[in-house]
Length: 460
Image (cartoon, rainbow, N blue to C red; front, top):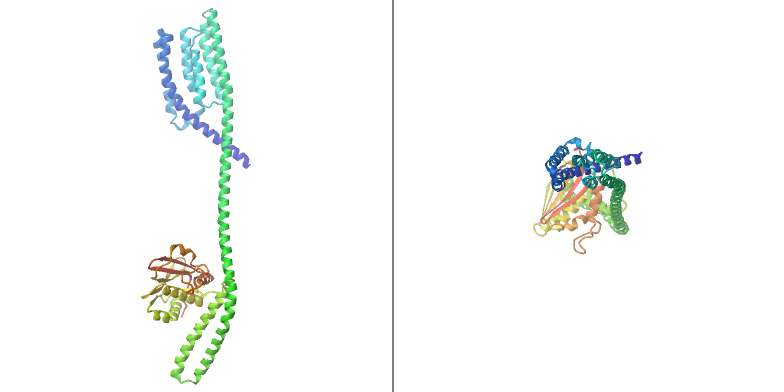
C-alpha cells in the first residue's frame, strides 16, 4: 500500500513539473510566434511580391491570435489545460503558412519548409507527449494536403507534382524523426526524474542516518561522561573507606568525653554548670556535624535510598549555619548577613541543608580578603519551589570553570587548602533532597542558588 502511495505521489510530482514547464515554455513560444511570424514577411516580398500585403495580413492575424493565449497563461485554469499549448502554438503559424500555400495556387510552393520549422521549433520549446505530437503532426499534414491538393488538380505540370511529392516526403520524414525523437526524449526525461527521486531519497536517508549518528555520538559522550563520573565516585568510595576508619575512632573518644563531662556538670555550681553545658552542647553538635560529613563522604559513591523529606524552616537552618560560622567570620573581620523570611519552609534534610550552607559560606569567605561579605537570602520560586541564595563579593569563578565546579576533586584553591569535594557533596545532597544547585558568577559577585521543593509552614 505504501509503495502504491509513493508511486502515485511521484506521478503527481512528475505531472506538476511538466505542467510548470509547459506553462513557462508556452509564454516563450507565444512571444516567438508573435515576433517571428510577421518578421518573416521579408520572405513574402522576395518570393511572392504580388501577394505581400495579403500575406502580411495573415501573419498579423496569426500573431494577434497569440495574444489571448499569452494572457490566458495568467489565469488559474491555465494549469488545467496546459497540454493544449504544445498543440495550438505550432498549429497557428502552420495554418497561416498553409493558407499562403493555398493562395499562391502553387502545389510545389517552397513554403512547406515553414511547416517543418514550426514542428522542429516546437519540439525544442515543448516536451511533447506521444499523443500531443501525433495529433499535431496529423493536423499539420492535413492542413498541408488541404492547401496543396486543390492547386495540383488545376495543373498537369509533372514538375509541380514531383516537387509536391518531394515536399510531402520531407515533411513526413521530419514528422517521423520528431515522433521517435520525442519518444526518446520522453524516456530520457522519465529516467532523469526517476534518478533524481532516487538521489533525493538517498539524500534523505543519508540525512536521517546522519541525525542518528549525531544522536548516537551525543549519547556516547553522555555515557563517557557518566563513566568518568562513576570512576571519580569509585575513587572517592575507596578513599572514604580509609578516612571513615581513621576518623570515626577519635570521634567516638570525643563523644565519650563529652558525655562524661555532661555528667560532671551535675556536681558544678548552677551558674558554672549552665555555661559548661552550653559549651558541651556546641562541642557535641560540632562533633555530630563532623560525623555526618564523614558519613556523607562514605556514601558519596554509593548513594542510599533517599530518606523521607521533612519540613525545614529555612530561616532556622540559615541561623544555625551562621552560628557555626560566627567565629570564622569574626576572626577574619568579615560580615555575614542572613535575610531569610521566617515563613519559608522547604522539604528536605535539615542537617544536609545546614552542611551545604556552611560549605558555601566558607567558600565565600575563602574567596575574599579583608572586608569580606557573605549574604544569605531566600524567596519563593516558580512551580511551588523555594530558592535559597548564598552570595559573596569575591573575585568570581572563571567562565571556563563554571561547568566543572561540582565535579569531585576539582578545585581552584592552592594545594593543601582544599580537596575539591565540598561542592560535589553539596550537589549530591541537593539531589538527594529533590532539589538542585547552580551557580552564576562574575567578578565581584558569585551566587550559589539552591532550589528546593516548598512545604506548607508548620501549624502551631
